[in-house]
Image 1 (tube, rainbow, N blue to C red):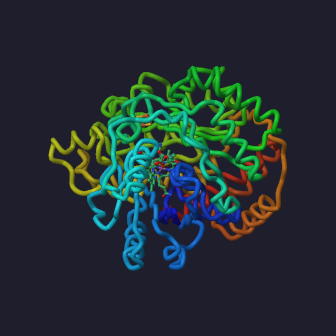
Image 2 (cartoon, helix red, strand yellow):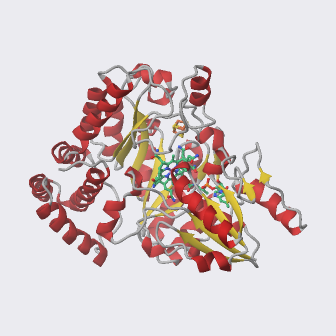
Length: 493
Ligand code: B12
Ligand code: SF4
């Protein structure tokens, strides 16, 4: 059996990092971990090829080679999914689809032959059994959440590894919290399910064998969802592994803000090679945190928490939302002040949207406020419900936030804020490759010479050399990210 695994193209967005990737001659930030995980679960005699359309083109001959095309997607990839379906229909190749887009709603894709929904650890074996017996069904789904302690090491070898900025691994699924707008718990449940330490070390071994020596993103919904297991079991073992292999990777992940309450855990993460963490901050407005049930963010000094994390050796990137029912017009300036004070350089500010199968969706449906389907991109000015605040006021406020945090003046000021507070502990030996040298030269030319905001670039460059010379690589990286953010948000300087 020949299987072609296809990952559809995603549009330019905050997360695509398209304009930053050009500096380091990479095509995509991360590979499609779901697809290569599914690939590793297929029968060993099957032939497999992968086309990630974000790094390479989908050719007709690839489709013609395949007996089955396997597609994985999230909402944001919808329009590329449509094109793939058309091409497969034209070539008469059977299609199998899975992943979050289809798990949440597959009714829009009648041309797809088989939907293998939810987590493939349960549904894929059901399909393979029926296929073997010559009677595969249209839809496979389950209400159960599988243990992931026997999920195989993903087929990393199928990737054109050098085209990605970072690799990714998954340690756990699920999150104990219950934020109203979040679909993670409907997809993966509240119980945090972990792979074994042995599985994780095997994944690190595989990446190492493939000569990967760059960042590794741990894609967990909440890395500290089961603090005890990671603090006393996993991290000490990862720490040993990293020491033994001379720190070949840097790690980053996603976690809830209560990470700030455990200094020992933060230091252990930083000593293991973690250099940053993404945190859903959402809003400094306490009433809006109440509204969305972000309990872990309530009743705390959020700026202090962020700074504590930075001082423990982890940079913080963050997600922010406007459009809550409790947001008053003052929220825009509060968000700007918060982001500037906290030194969160990569701040993903989005408009609230209600994805299907969330409590927010049900509430807005009962209040008859839903208007359309969510696009899946919360930075494209779209909303799928009628907000309490006047929509135009909300959009104007949102644009003001973006302008006031991403134009060069405040953006470079924020980098300085971070670098002043951040205390790195990373033990990775400094190795400068040709990729980094080229990135520096390109950034000097494009950001330092051709770009309007060049004075800020040079001021920060000199400030870093004088005050925090060890952090010059971070300065370069953030300058390049800033260029991407300005491009993606259409800001001129
Ligand atoms: C890593 C990640 C990213 C990465 C990129 C990933 C990539 N390769 O490009 C980054 C950080 C860039 C990112 C960005 C975004 N992401 Co994201 N991301 C994730 C995250 C945290 C992990 C994904 C992952 O690797 N999982 C591990 C694998 C093993 O799980 P999996 O993909 O679900 O696969 C399993 C099953 O689904 C199934 N399966 C999957 N595919 C297939 C295919 C077939 C054929 C079969 C049989 C089975 C199958 O089998 C697998 C094993 O069980 C998920 C949350 C999550 N826990 O999954 C969100 C998630 C996928 N992202 C989401 C969103 C909304 C986004 C953004 C649009 C955010 C935004 N608002 O702007 C952006 C858009 C990206 C862009 N480039 O424009 C949503 C998708 C919702 C949806 N229903 O589509 C998720 C689910 C998080 C959420 N909030 O609910 N993301
Ligand atoms: S903490 Fe994050 S992953 Fe968990 S429910 Fe809230 S938004 Fe979702």
